[in-house]
Length: 122
View 1: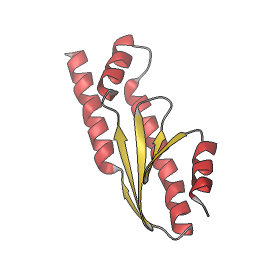
View 2 (view 1 turned 90 degrees about the vertical axis):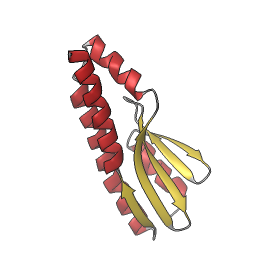
View 3 (view 1 turned 90 degrees about the horizontal axis):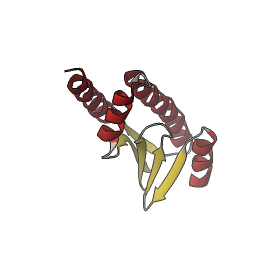
């Protein structure tokens, strides 16, 4: 299967995909959090990361009081975990070696959220 079929599968799940060089970036529509898929031959690394403006974005949400930001962040992380399961299957079915590195990104995002919540509550 082609990489285009991978992109089509991701888009069908409601995500936007950007391609740059040997990397696909999967963007979430609610938060500036994304998955990077980095290709190196038949090897693939999937990482969870976020834009530099995530802190400001979350601070604005917290200050607006319109949403439970903790739940929103957890939902987005959960959605990316579900998508990663689909990616894992697609890559395995298509002969790729896959290395999934979501935990570091998850921890960084949760730590950022915790810092913001502590500052706004204090």
